[in-house]
Image (cartoon, rainbow, N blue to C red; front, side, top):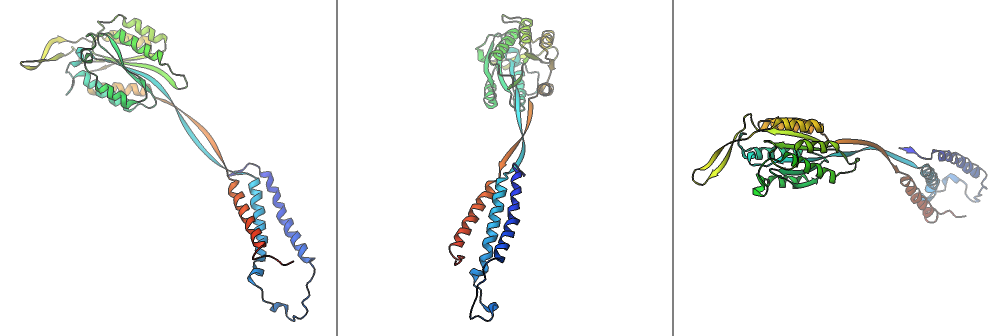
Length: 336
């Protein structure tokens, strides 16, 4: 606690001056003769008489409280406030037919990717995240949002080629163009967003779409958008399962091919990085590393809040003054 106007404390000199004045007044007060009383000390003193000095004490307390209130005591409370500067992230997920390949434990590539992305979202804070899916063409499933619960629900419903709604193939260039356009349209003020990135996961090569991956990457680079690329799948590819009405689940003799060269070139052009994921653990490690590279930034602002305390002295002063006036005119009233 400190005083905003400590100069008013000089008014405390009033108290000793008041004491001197009261003593002077008492010493020069006219004497009262009591004619028939032989022993003055034997005159009984009532409770009211004994309490008369308390009025002066009340007056001193009231004056002291008023002086302190004039000095404006304040209570300082130092606090800090954190301001999050989030990142805009578009997740580009390959949902082509090859993502049904079962070369990861207990699930196909798509389900594995969805599980890892779901965990990635749980570690984001104050970042706007959107979702773009692609096969032979690209499609925005969720624009940038802070509602991760809704985004996870949308992610859970993603299936290969959106159940036949999208053409088959792998249009990497179109996917990057779609994410770039989404980030450009939804650009946020710099004081809110500290960066814009794309995390593109695919298990194939660009064999569809109308935009070349290099062209799309150059466009992203010109808009200061980094693209992190993830190549998913084991060396040599994997067989793709299908349902046979007679024999049940079978596998096609078609192997997937991952074009790592194109993915590395996209990352290099945009200032991102290329990662290779061959199983669940390595894919989790990839997203963890990206999480460390693209952390939400926080600014800490220290500020001091001043709380006026004058009322805590002024209110008791008024109440005590009122008590003094009441006593002076009732039980402690003096006869002139």
